[in-house]
Length: 152
Image 1: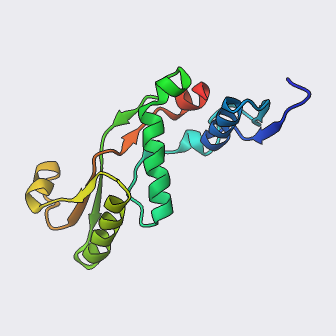
Image 2: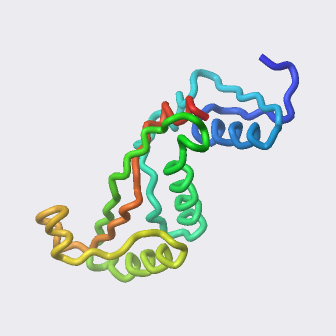
């Protein structure tokens, strides 16, 4: 272990590992400290789905940025993260349709590939769910988080 560092990062989850990676990329001497093993905490227990469907614009923009990182993960890091584009569907009741439409409009305005689905499209994806207003975010994806942390 190094006795000196420009930066010490505490925690080997996705935030700590990616922060350490980006700092090292910029030429800083980085030490990553983890109490157990990489992705041993919350990151390793997550569902590992990354979506862009958020009602907060800043969060939506951050998620969109993350999409580009994971789509180009191998080129950026030299390793694989298990990126699997699977899509993401949001169901909303009739009372929530207006809010859902506003979220979709905001997300589209920042460049997120999302749209409201028709009843026919809903029936194709999930028969029986056509009574709900639904959103499809085709660029949502899963990744193998333990592999991703190891690569960082």
